[in-house]
Amino acid sequence: MGEGHETWVPLIKNVSSLQISYFNPNLNTWIDRWSNTSQMPWLVKVTVGRSDSPSALGSDYSVEADAVLRMKAPNSKLRGGAALMLALWALFLLSAMVISWALDINSRLAVSGNASRVLDAEAMASSGADVALHPLIKPDSANLHGQMGKHEGYDVKMIGECGRLNLNFSCSKARIHEAGNFAPLSQP
Image 1 (cartoon, rainbow, N blue to C red):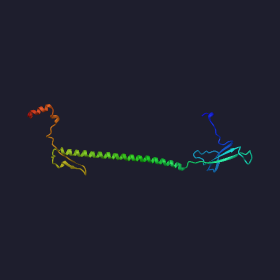
Image 2: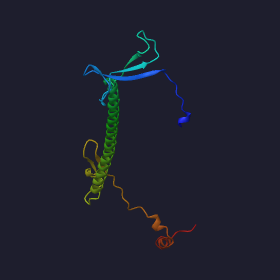
Image 3: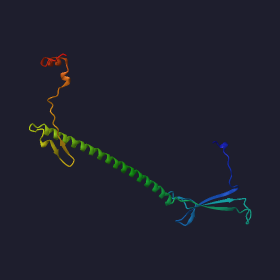
């Protein structure tokens, strides 16, 4: 706003003097200038002098009205509340990190356990297959059933493949014609 649009409302009329004093508890006296920027003054005294106030001492004497204001210094309770909130926030973040770390470890243990069981099953199957492929093993051999631990083991079932035909190989027209030469089909 420009200077032409400002309006002033006087709170006290006919003020002849204004004095502001600060109480210093270390010196136990009032001082005119507060120089300690790290601490607020405890008390502030505002003295307003008016020239038109009635006085018992005559019209040349100016009457002063004193107002002492008690300043609220930032106390330790207010700072302690901020520190408490900061400590709670830090505790919350740390607990969230610990919980996520524990869940990550739990999921890694589950994945590792499953991978270990799969590896054990593949090892048992490979052991059973190796035993079954040995040329001296017979279908009724006791070596086809093995137990490695409480829950680990293998059971091999040997099935002969001699009587089976490969249908992809034997259904081609040339193969059917060749098969007909060896075993003629009877026509009804």
